[in-house]
Image (cartoon, rainbow, N blue to C red; front, side, top):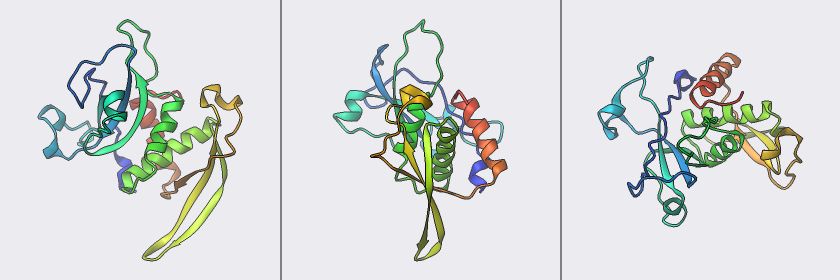
Length: 201
């Protein structure tokens, strides 16, 4: 699939709430949102392409009050996760931890674009490899106007913070569409995600 040749090039946090323009405080809960606007929807700085000639995916942070109480969602939303604004001198952490990977994957439950479907599938494979998802089978579904689609069924951990030692959440099931990408493409995208999101793979 051609969309997997893209590098998911994500910028660092700006420290400013995208909804209100106010400065975000250290320790504050925010929603980190990945957005993928077209060229005409970007500033001059954001139009700079990466080394593959592609526009990078952008990150915007939204204060929890604006996200939860005012239902603010940035345009061209790709996916999101909750995090906290780090303290100024705090030791560098992973940009995206295991819980955030799962939340990002779950936030893309209604994904329809090929790029989003591929991104979500690879995130599920990362969690599966970390033994934070359990593969329960594959459901094959015929489409009226399209090919048969395969949906992978997963069970997540009850408390992902406990890692692979935690119990399974038997009351929850997650479905992820298999975009039928090659093993080589999966490896390539996983490496890209590891570099860009600073994942502990």
